[in-house]
Length: 88
Image 1 (tube, rainbow, N blue to C red):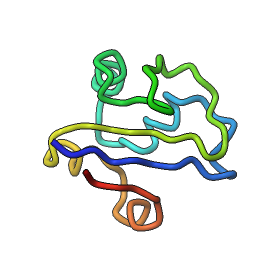
Image 2: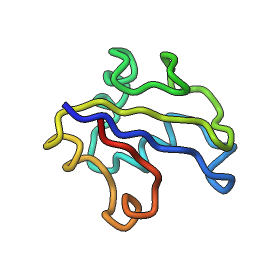
Image 3: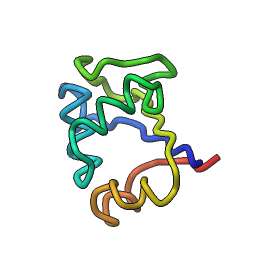
Image 4: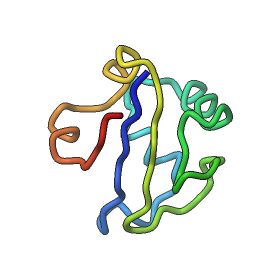
């Protein structure tokens, strides 16, 4: 399993968490995103989230998943290069 950490930038702030995740994980069905939230595989600022939270600048999103699944779901390689993330 791999954990990726994303930091919300000023221009991404103000949107709902679930909408942001759907943009980030374009290839993943909505049911998968919500299941990951329920199982705490996706957390916001180290806390369980429902998806209804409104993002603020500098919020921290951690996604834990199998590397292959994460590669299939994450949208666009260009976004990944510009996003701040850490693999642990």
